[in-house]
Image (cartoon, rainbow, N blue to C red):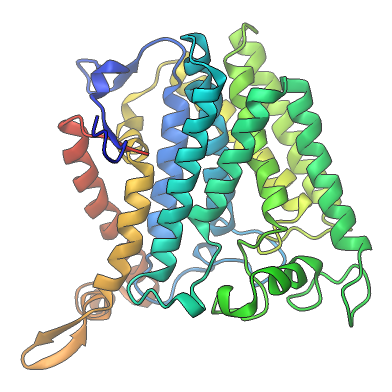
Length: 392
């Protein structure tokens, strides 16, 4: 433990042990399936966010309404953040930590995550007058903070009511409250309530520079994102319960399919939209997350088919570190290097000469991102082997 930064380098053997076949065997009450779920999400993030050039449509965000594989990554990560809360905070409660101490830890972690997000959005110029305030880590920070407080303050039933209430309230606000110059219920890039609030509070110069008029990680849309996190909290709490294992799997599947159905039906009135993080999007993606977690729990934790999970557990063990380093790597990828006396950008040069030149633009792009994933997996495997885990 490094007390000056409160970043811990923990030995994985404190929480798990490795079996002869290389699979990670966890101590009771810890889910390998949840670690694998988190790792799969990170793997998708690395592949989708680092295509070499032109990419297949499945690796692109929906233009506005709709949902692709790419649009599942962020809600899956928030779901995993929520699912970790009953385990991390539950362990602290069970060993007798005072609530004040737990709250201080929650605040500390939230502030560090938000500060990391500001660092990434400002790097490398750190131009404060145009610094984007919100972002991926900033949203994770806010969702983690409020979900943790709700977990400590409310029982599971009230957590469910809170999540449902957030979705209904957001729906009402977005469809019933008019924006100056527009009628109520506008859900386009301009004229929607979320964008209006962001421009009033954050100001356009501190919003996502690509859009100029809205922010995909804005303030109001963090409300339903919190509901996504709470779905993960409730799911993990249920898996920690004394309900028979098979019943847990069946019920998670049922609620997962119910969530998908609700999302698809709600889509007719409140379209599935990641940028607005609509309530239908939360129900739809949350339902898929529940289905996948139930399937993983059945296969990995109950049937103990764990060997295949090792690469994903490795990635998930340092999830925030992978995200931060991969974001910083973008600046290295587009740095200029001298090749035969000519200045070229590193990423386009590697992609065009070593991937697209023989595999074509689409397959070459996918192969480049796959190689990028393998690069980070190799680094994380070294840390994993040395039992180094950087946690905030």
